[in-house]
Amino acid sequence: MRKTPGQTTPHLLNRTDRRILEALQEDAGLSNQALAERVGLSPSPCLRRVRALEEAGIILGRVALLDARRLGLELTALIHIGMDRHTPERFASFEEAVAAYPEVQHCFLITGQAADYLLQVVVPDMDAYQDFLLRRITRLEGVSSVHSSFVLRRVVDRTALPLNYLRN
Image 1 (tube, rainbow, N blue to C red):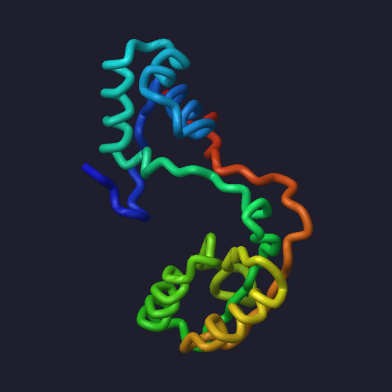
Image 2 (image 1 turned 90 degrees about the vertical axis):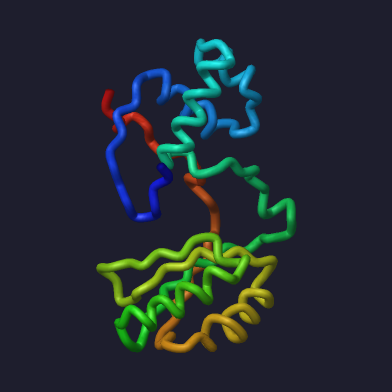
């Protein structure tokens, strides 16, 4: 049964399951044969375990990670956005809109700041950012404040989750 976002059920994973997850986080393009060799299983049991992890909603999908700079996407902006009203309808409308923008890499509903949302946006340059901000973000209904910061350098940039917290 596939889990819905936000629904958490702790899963007890054994050492082999963790090794499978670690290997796939490192290289999701591994063939089943290569994955099985890496974790010390034969191919059939390895495939069964991967499918079980997918069905449990632990493996959500597999992606190729691209180098933004080599593709000309040189500017990463972090945008704090304040909303004028805190209603479910206003938030749902905003979230639906930003989900449709390919420039938005992450959108977080946050607390503890003078903002309601934090967006991570990737664009080619400052001109593209200004266009994105003025033609899209500031035109969304309910947006009352926007504060931008720009990434100078990525110090830690990982997608792998820390599996050392999982229990047996």
